[in-house]
Length: 258
Image 1 (cartoon, rainbow, N blue to C red):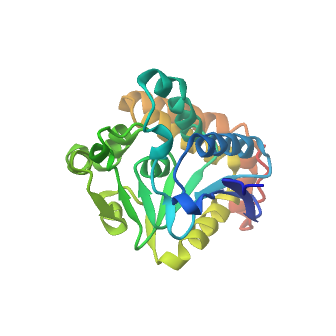
Image 2 (cartoon, helix red, strand yellow):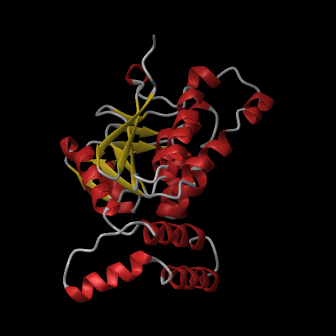
């Protein structure tokens, strides 16, 4: 029996950890892995006891890219039929916060996978990159779009057109990485942050995430209207009443997601 290529763990209350588990292939993203990540994120999004998700690999690689052996002989129609855009959209569309805990390599599809997440925690020796041009293709999982939105046109062009890798420090300074930590602390820091988020009101967290993602590519007036409607709706939640009452009474709130 082969080992599972994607594992789901529960490292803390309210937190699910989804781990890519192909160490022999540096966690390369074959179709099985892509489908399982999408499946597990969908399942965890539907699980009421889960409030935040951590996506990670191992200390050598978050994901070193797509599985080139699997795709090298494919034609255009076969690539179309793989349906990878739908899988990427499912991952990026998870309504609950997803934190990427990145150690080692996050290249090609691995870099793109990290960019579908909401927060990226990276180890100091992690390496990022979109080296697809070196094998005759371009980033196909959102790299040309998400990297540009994250770091700007000129930095994105510099790395997409050369295929050069860049360090976690460079990624942090460009605004791609949310937080830079020692290598040994990556997973722990991601779990700790997930625990922090899991203790907050889940409806507010979900609406905050939606407002950011829906508004980022919209006109400012549209984004502001979305934000306004979201905060108005939250005033119908029990968590809003509990949160404000706890603040006034100087006690710790207990949020139920209602």
